[in-house]
Length: 177
Image (cartoon, rainbow, N blue to C red; front, side, top):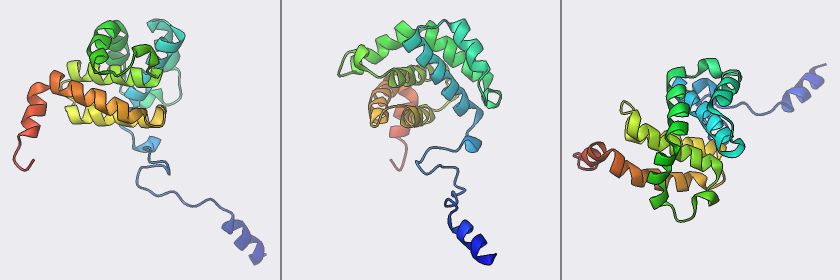
């Protein structure tokens, strides 16, 4: 009997650390904030808009029925989804000059992540620019292509200096920098 229990214990998968990260470096669902979850659901909705050309109403209804949505910050989700879809052309106009290729060649995931970042830079002033940047990089890492997060980082970092001038300037001129 003891040999059997020892063998089965040896076949168990290794224990995951309790750092809040999965083995791939992504945050575990339990350690995500309501706003982080709102960004993830908004990203899914924006992807549906970009790829499926679904309407805001259809996307909103579908997304609210997804597992885990109750843990998201619904006000932030509403602001991101509605704001990005409503102001898509204006967001693209800000993003386009920083691209090294046509918008059509950008992955829909990275495109949507950049929309979220630009929208938050402009309309969510309670979120520090570094937090917006980091959250968008994490979204791109988790849902985008292999190096998509690097592209998102470069574009949003360039826009942060234009859209959050005072905040970025103050940080860069702070003592110890």
